[in-house]
Length: 162
Image (tube, rainbow, N blue to C red):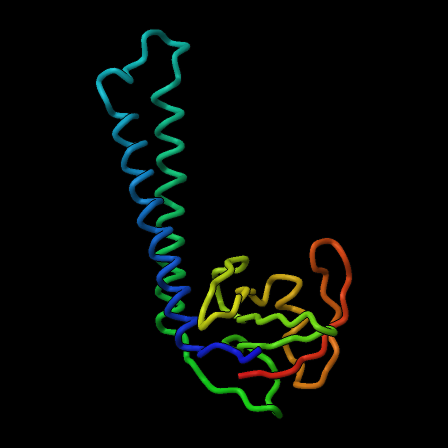
């Protein structure tokens, strides 16, 4: 398996995060409108529907803010090329192999857990805070790394870093 182009991975991640932000914005706006709608006015002192909706709208608005911050951090992330002698750090596109199982991971500052299809390859985004990302930081091509995949420990060899 040939690793996909790193810039295409970053662009696909930006697109995915932008779509999530757009969906979250629509949800927050709809919830806010529901909380302030005249029919949401409390019928008695025990009716807290509008209050609950306002709490939900606030949480959704915070999620939109977080997504927009992630998008900005990714846009301004320094994209560098990694060679076979470089240690893995944020921005690395890593190819792992265990027998016939080949995996491609992108170590990003945000967006962990998102799986992208780029150049015909599945790329899993991991962050340094995740167990998989933490296991890769500081490693080099040829190193073995133990990862938990679907609940099972698996030994992988770092095949390539770009």
